[in-house]
Length: 193
Image (cartoon, rainbow, N blue to C red):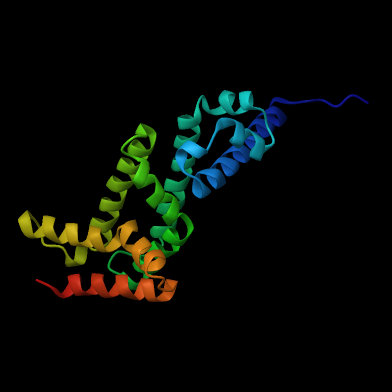
């Protein structure tokens, strides 16, 4: 008996292939420098052809863009679980996110000066991170002016991936101690005028 192949089946197969490529690319981008990730490597890890990757994403930068869109959505979901004003929950969400993607994020900052796709992705992430800081710590921010700009800058420094990476990986602090240090910095900012 001949099986009927529907457009829905085709769409499902295309989506499944796309998700498999994205998962493989994410792993490769997380574990390697940008230049060390190739379309052939992505294709091989996903179990598809080089041409299939091109058909779905057009280029390596297209794959990177799709991966960063997925990461952005995951980050927004994770961090939005913390209510504005709840510093402990905000730091826990931030550190949980950095534990997953922080080293890849930090590695990307080292390459962004020469890889426009990374620079674009990080610029978008910085805009989103600043908006998160302003929303999450609004209760402790001055209404306007120089004092507001300076306090936002201090919150950005305390919550930046480089701060997490330095504590967690350069100095070898535990996840718990790293979260405690970041919380201490933020709570100090909250009580300053």
